[in-house]
Length: 123
Image 1 (cartoon, rainbow, N blue to C red):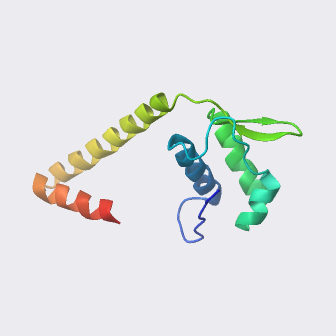
Image 2 (image 1 turned 30 degrees about the vertical axis):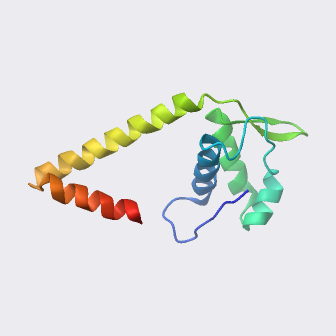
């Protein structure tokens, strides 16, 4: 499992863990039925608190990505990836519409906004 934690990110560490795991699940890098590392072993591997990894796992369980079985660990659930992908696309559309609205409010031309988007996307 390849997770990268940034201590300088504004995003809390548990969110970084959760978001990276969710991304790997949606991309099929972690598959249905796969056993995730234990909370303790992942915390040790990442050099973070057990409470932090527990929060990430708890959130993922609440969102339906994983299930935890006492004494057996946490497993990836069979998720409807198309439905989850569609939800993410809707979120992206909303964010892009917000950016367009703000650009229009200051008179920014479409070409400049597209140029800005492409520059940011290359990062």
